[in-house]
Length: 561
Image (cartoon, rainbow, N blue to C red; front, top):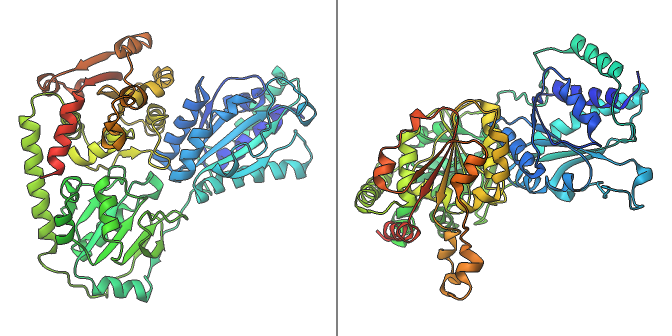
């Protein structure tokens, strides 16, 4: 049987055979053959998302949490263009996704036909793979090429870290007949298996022997330091960080989103004391072992710049090298399943080295707790300290950008289930990313976002209706973009408030109620202390109304100690 549905069903099933499990579908007419092919596939989980920009970030969250690409399906025109922000973040942070855009056939292009734009390589270099599928053809060579395109898409999105884009032109009629639908259902039921091939995502375990130059750097070192930047689930080298820290007796700085936590070697309050030039000098390492993507906290960026002459070894599962300070001497490409062979190597560190870091860390922690206790107004810091201590370890935490991840580094801690969008580091799509994490892991999720980032992605509230497990939207409402207070433009009173802080007069409670989402507001330390997060079942929006001036004062006080 030859039909559009035969073509798209063949392709979707091939994607499934390569490990794809989720399809995020935005409604449209031209994409009907793709939508129905996904709808009838028994192994693919479907979610309908009206806003394509939000849909893109939901797919991003799925890829970020699982390492397996989700499939996006949309109609032609501006619908496809709305995926670009998520595709950009995917490229910059190495997250896999697959984008299927429906298109008008060639005879309708370039002549002013409705809802028709040039979709050939629509995303430019932001996509890691592109294929024009062509109009449906049904000889065996064409079907073989179509299945191979599915393999290429899955493998390139995972191996290169980003979005694979495939463009599907269709002529009318777009709708399959009932007979065609029944035929495809029968075909799928006969070939369907719960055990997917997943050939694109299997990684074999290797034992890696470091080269002699790297071995010499390590064995000659007396003051090694491990720095773990943010990373997606499939890029996290947790076991390697743990093994190296124990072998080298090395302090570990793990930024939010790194996934590393609960280690006796971990230093928690680095964001306070590494801003001090005196501390940076006294704690300067003689070797840096970096894992994950580029660190983002101010203290680490300043420290790595100050230590740019220190030999640096970069361990990464990504092809690209993220090196803001341009100080990496050696790169070791490895996967999370790899092991390093250093059993016969001799190493002896400075016995006082880690104790110096622990002493600085303990002093900073005491000062932080004093500040939390004595500051009367509810601050951003209070909220992060509370969330970090009250959320159980099985919760996934999605952190927005701007001050949010930096405050978690300062007042909270790195955890296994933390995620950040630090590739392009925009404030768009934060809640949508959290929804993708929730959909793919079925874990309780807390999305911590600022008021502006929340409003920027408020369409995502539409996609929360079917989430059954605990999901907290924690909105830090401090009256706008307060990170701009750190910049020289803050001194220009004429423009600063209206053009940079941009406070919004939106009643967040009414927005929650419009989507039938339970709402709470926390405005004081006493209300914060009485908040029981473990009592939450299903989706709940909590607005934390904090004092922006006291929040900034608290940060500055801790930075200067």
